[in-house]
Length: 352
Image (cartoon, rainbow, N blue to C red; front, side, top):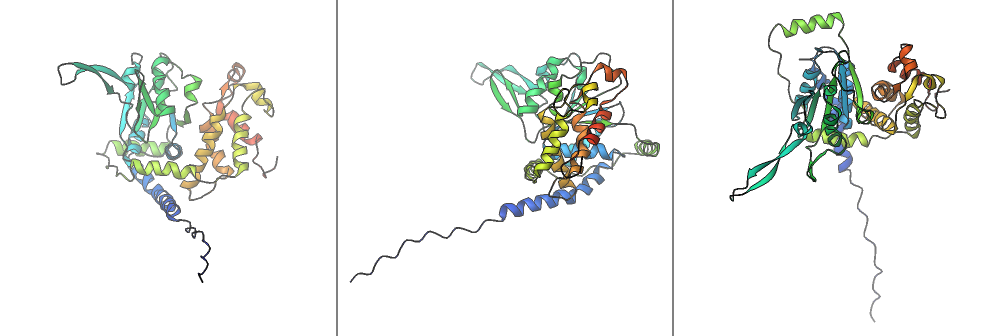
């Protein structure tokens, strides 16, 4: 008598792997522990400007671009170069001038010998093929040349003669502009301004810090900056930032801040209808949440709070809100409008 065949059993499902979680935790711990070291390295050459450094760092961790506005001589170029050294990123500086052409940024095709007696078109890469681009005085070049950066900033690629040339990752653009000298400048179009995650304003230092700067820069050669991270680390930080959980009410709060800046829209405050010609778009909410996630990580938290969003509202919105002539006549500044928006817009559970 034959014995019955045993019933087939389904294989035991493997236990969930903790490898990914452990790697993410290690990356987060490296970032949190490295924050103080980054600040210490930058302090070798940069005095003060802690808020500016933090905002640029947040944009770097979130994968966004920055517009840096400040008067000449405030160490904007030095700051960007120093951050590139800390993260071991390939740095390129492009001086924007009225005669700069798009090909001077992206690259161009030239005829070269092909080794077989003939010639062929070869694409020669421009300075945009680096990890960190300093677009110095970007508003001194015509809109046609400014627009050469649009594809690079949005798509991380350059197209020449129908051929796509991917840029090196990670890729950041940090553009500077001088707010004082407006003669011979070309204001950035709104479409390009919207590509920048933050508009970071560098102001003059307090007297004590300025004395320290003069003392350091006239006493000897500054200490060398130590490289702490690599480009691969930065890419891992990008992935980690996007995995930080955020509550729905925090997303709603960020979106409400942006939408409340649009005149003639439901829920727009009276002062917005009175002073604002154009408000922030959807990218503002996206960048607010991404920046808030990066800020939370830097502070050792795995969740976003309303404080994170409020701290980044001014740099994220100031270049996305266009004031009208009435506001200019009354001496109203964009930052003041944003502060009023913050006071008028309350996160869920915080009361009206």
